[in-house]
Length: 362
Image (cartoon, rainbow, N blue to C red):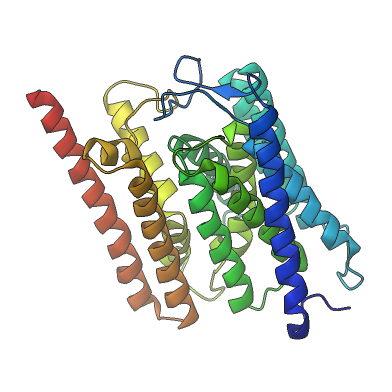
């Protein structure tokens, strides 16, 4: 049976619904039976300072990995899936698993930053070994270094973004959904990515049931590191590599696509990192200086902060899909994409300055 034939769409929907219900069940069990293990609060030594003041179990990431493996098992059972042992599939599996393990170790033992960085570097090296490389120049070593920068950057960005209820889970749903749509638009229809991507979206939806404000459960580093590795890998495969072989050496369209799809993580991490370094602080030490926190300082309620983030993320992804679907020429694509990104970036900097001046007056 061809699971992806149009007449079998009902089976796909049922499988997706089962995965969502499974995620709700697993996370519900974590909430019910977890009392102290994996708790996250403001009083620990976490590298992420959370907006909420109460301690909550950080087991959500475990459900992500369970549903990821569940979806892969469905892929493995397909009779017409082609070659099961594909080096790119294997790289995504291994790097996502390593991301999960280093996050789990950090949640359980509060590991040293160097150990986490080493795990993130290993994820990038595995992707490079399988040929998952961002091709932005004719210099292979530069492509390798940029790929490593992207993988480690996204893994840290997703981790840093997990500072308020519902933010990372909802934005990750938007990013994965946009990438799955790209699979259809480019006819790059790989059942592995469709099934595993759908499985992770289902896991996030089930988790969001417990993570929406006021949340009962956090994803922890277990979830953010797994998501970071998974998102970094699939974005390289489906978002970064729209390169025209006969085009110029530097093609701005390649950069605009990920800037729009990952607009919230990139702007938040860039803003926070630069401002912390200007103050003489490490960008990896947690604090209440993220965009989410500044929106809350302006009086935006926690639920609406997540809605604002979600709306901007959807708009960025939709703009990319719109431009890509109509195959706009570069002269139109570049100014529209860059214009939206930098307009949002400047608005956020103005918001930061407004809050800084208000704080100074007090």
